[in-house]
Figure (cartoon, rainbow, N blue to C red):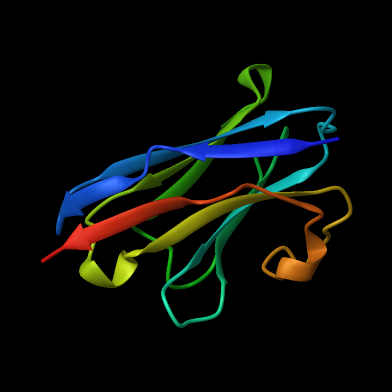
Length: 125
């Protein structure tokens, strides 16, 4: 059974940076896709981007490009989300997800089999 655990969330001010971590336990293959999503209060869960565990390919939604960076360390079983120039509208619960057969629809929640419990990020103005 694969388990994911996010950490690194908290309360920051607008313009600050924050790095979230997602540590996995259990068997995840090197070709699996790891993704970051977020869900603001009253809104649908949206994808930020995704990364192939090994190989380094990363994908971002248009809204994430330029401020958010996803990286991975397969040896440490950890995926990171670096967030810069944070804005109040970035306030949300951030989730990591893992999927074995994700393919080109890396942005779709239904492609992922495993989810973390989420970590709250609050950006004050």
